[in-house]
Image (cartoon, rainbow, N blue to C red; front, side, top):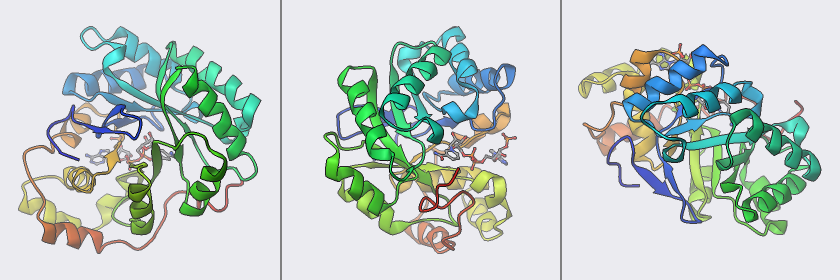
Length: 278
Ligand code: NDP
């Protein structure tokens, strides 16, 4: 990944360009809160929004993108995800239609299987392949898939997933999974890059950030990008949305990257993908 600016992209295995920095909107309330957050993000130059049916804010996401006065929908990369209870072939097709209705879009940039629901994700993938073949989605991918689940899916898949979005932050690096995705030409994407806000309690990050005259949030976003990882930090606060993306005027040294890597404790804040019972 050549890191240039906030509108910089990675090229997925099907040639689609995906902005490497986006705004996550989990826990952003539908209506004014999510609409404001997206408008501030677009004003600041973000061109990538990550939502999901589960987040109950697809309507607001769609409204925000349709109502911005300068940026048009086609200039923004939008991801949504099929929720666990909607998995299976027919259910996924229905869930996709409902997401599109709420968003008010005629195509989606990226649609992900939110979690690897055992016994269902292969049928769910067939539905994503159909929607992709029909041109309704520009790219399809996975979320929260471990290596063995990707390998299992690939046995029957006609289309190679373009993305795997998983929990990733300095307390959970999963280097083997990163390597596997890289070798398989599947773009690795980080969710909860700030460990849902908990990462700010890791005191070792503060002096490293200070060295570069940056905040810990900026340091982490930059660490993601220098590792060629797409990242979607969430905030609903204007100042934070702007400052989290102010990461293109510094370079973390290899030595400091290694110091951040060493904070890994293989410690999840979210669920274990081998135990999806929700
Ligand atoms: P993040 O790791 O992005 O952390 C968000 C938290 O950090 C919020 O409480 C936010 O508060 C706070 N915050 C943001 N910027 C700053 C800052 N500069 N200084 C201090 N605090 C800050 O958590 P998320 O779980 O939201 O992950 C990001 C996105 O990843 C989600 O929004 C969603 O799109 C996606 N995701 C995907 C999952 C999946 O299963 N595929 C699971 C979880 C998330 P505030 O808003 O008040 O600023």
